[in-house]
Length: 166
Image (cartoon, helix red, strand yellow):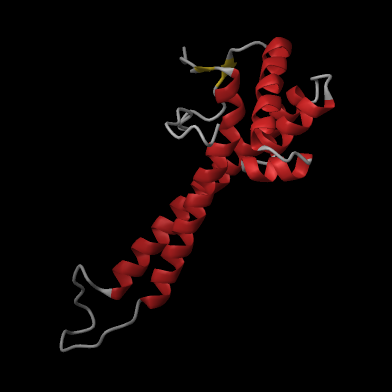
């Protein structure tokens, strides 16, 4: 029997943000590896061609390719999980009757916009107004769907010491 982690509504809504960040970080790692591969050069020395040591270009390129393939597979798996999560989340958000609440939750959690962008999209002049609407929207979400959700992706970190993300 598999033990599923239970999340609060805020943690559930924030999963998309964390997963999107994780995918972005891995994409940047992949770009760095691709850049490193291009820097590999063949060196010629006095050693016979059949002898290889741990620093041979062939071994380095092989290791880079293995790392790239592993990261690509992880990105695909996490992107699939993100897609499932976002569509499930959007379906739940659109069940809230207040359009203003739907919008703030969609902009923040489905599009993963920063607070300043949510403020601009919704036409607010004060960021505190966005926070208040968001808090009310989360309460409406909890009222509609409860405050207990299963975690979509098991290797995500949903706790965040930096409150600015939430």
